[in-house]
Amino acid sequence: MAGPGTELTLFHQEHRLSLSPWQQYKKNLGETRPWDLLNPNKDRSSEEIQKERMDTCLSCPELIQLTKTCKKCGCFMEMKTKLEYAKCPIGKW
Image (tube, rainbow, N blue to C red):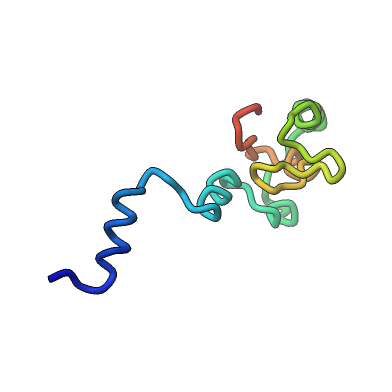
């Protein structure tokens, strides 16, 4: 006889390739966190790199132009582009 939680386990096995919206958001966010900007020990991008990244974002359909927020990761891109090790969630930079 199956114990409690068996149905949930079977569901996860059957749907293991799909992520919940929260899991997908965390995956898209990558390793960068908003509070990294407050950490003086986190490396910053050069102004040239930051500008190149932001120019790429400005031409991307995933950017909410009004707020300069990425629809994929939820980050404010004018801030995220300043972090050296930040990555675009769809691989554009």
